[in-house]
Structures are given as C-alpha cells and as structure tokens.
Length: 149
Image (cartoon, rainbow, N blue to C red; front, side, top):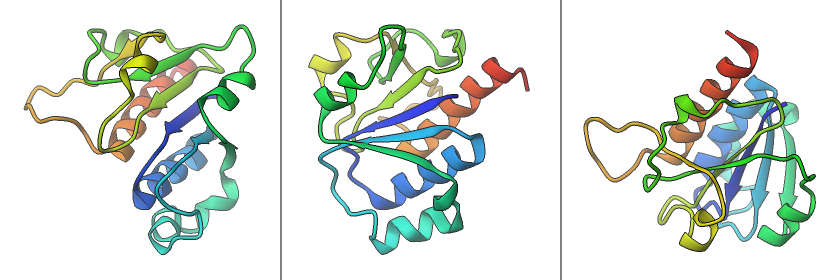
C-alpha cells in the first residue's frame, strides 16, 4: 500500500484530484490540518466526483499527530523543488509515504530538514508543478516501481 500525504493543503480542487488519484491507485490519502477548505466544498466534490467512496482517507490534526501514527519502519519522502535527487531514483517500497506541502509555499524548511527529499524534473523551468499533478506523477512512479507496471 502506498500513502499520499498532503501537509496543510489549500485548494479543494487539488485535493479532490489527489483523492481521485489515490482511489484509482488504491493508495491511502492523509490530510494534515489545517487546510483551507472543507471536504464538503463544491470544488472538492467536483474534482473527486464519485471516487470519494473508494478513498481511504485519514485526517490528522497536525504534523505531530501524523508522526504519532507512523511505525518505526515508515519511510516518508518529502517532495520539494529544493531537492537534488529525482523521484525516479528513490527506490520506492510498499508502505512508503509521499509528502507534499501546501500549494502556495511547499514544505516548510523545518520539515524538509528532517526528511529525505525528492524532486520532479522541470526541464522547461517554472516555479513548481500544480499539487495534484505533482502528487499524481510521484504516486504513479512509486506504483510503477513497487508493482512493476
């Protein structure tokens, strides 16, 4: 099982799209509060469509609550434009957690400092990819590595 973790996400539509990706992949979606919307928001519902019933969703009050539920063998990969290592070289394993920061600012420095970091290539430039696109690219690569698609 793969885990996709969104730390303080801000946009309902992005989270709905990530939830839909998780449903298709059979991944667990973790949302770490606070976030800038409600799961009942129309934008979230429009993006997730009828896939929400297939999403294993776990909500966490804050980073400490998320960490408390991890076991000692858990591997949490942070995704950041500040990372040197490409996501394709990670060697993902079953049970890994893929962590993404909020849309407007990414993962905070204090959090990045304690995690192995990965980046998605952006050969055309730009500041960053959309959260739902980045999570989808990373989750499908992790699934490819784990399942051998």
